[in-house]
Image 1: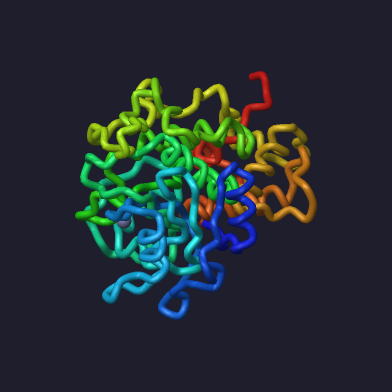
Image 2 (image 1 turned 90 degrees about the vertical axis):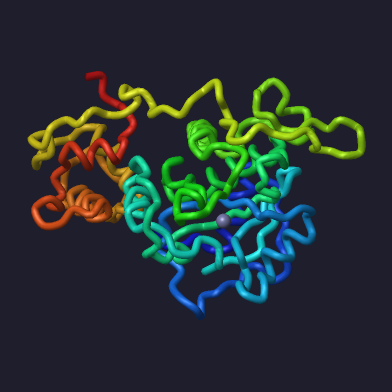
Amino acid sequence: MAEPLTAAQVLKALRDEGLTVHEVRSWRRHNRNTKGPWGPLNGVMIHHTVTEGVEPSVNLCYDGRSDLPGPLCHGVIDKAGEIHLVGWGRANHAGLGDADVLRAVIRESTLPADDQADTDGNSRFYGFECINLGDGKDPWPEAQKDAIARAAAAICRAHGWTERSVIGHKEWQPGKIDPRGFTMSGMRARIAERLRAPAGAGDRATGSDTGAGTGTGAGKATGDGGAGREPAPEDVPARPDRPPEPPAPSAYEPFPGAAFFQDGRSDPVITVMGHRLNAEGCGRYRQAPTPDWNQAARRSYTAWQKKLGFRGRDADGIPGRVSWDLLRVPRVSRR
Ligand SMILES: [Zn+2]
């Protein structure tokens, strides 16, 4: 859960991630904030436009339709992998979705089926519309998929979220099929890989041939005047050779036991824990986290437990195994 990024913050985050960003008209002030809340933000949602062509797609997402006023998302990602910002604030993209899915996104746990439409998603998700006809044939160029991963990673990095905070519209709202043409699990694996590296790492996929050899089915520029006519197989994973899997347990600090957290304890694990709590927006430190177990550390941990939905004695600030494992504290000890 988090306060929304400002327009300036998102612009910087996207550019730091190596993206080419176009600012469309008055996107910074273009929103639906008079119609409902915007925030707290919990995740990023990916869509396809069911349109073709950059300009008409961007204008549609900015202006909306007669039955659905714009903005229809925050950023439009085109087939060349460039992003067009069309709004900032509440936008008509997510609609009503499943409260259980929202809870899973907040906990960054496995997604349940989206079989309810009982929760306002427009206040909770950043939205990216990706230009694609959504017919299962219109290809997804490597440059576009790379840009989707970068845009999502930029937001996750700014909030301290993992790839599990990124979902497709079809995982949120019953009946939706977007995005179609790649799997969200494959896209999340790609985002995770990106988040393990510094912002903007790696060459941007630009030419249409950079997807060759990755088995993505992206259309190659064939020089026949019809770029992208090679149909993409449906639902091809973005990285079929690397299925999404949780990072090795050894990458994270194992739960040291509740008894570890007592007055007088001083250990680098507590410092690293504090940095993770800060990244989750739960830090209650006056200054930087220290190795000492103290009231500031305990108050911060209480905030994390409450963020996870724990109440009462379950949110007493003493780490338990469940909340500890969900926090994913990078390993520093040699135990
Ligand atoms: Zn959608």
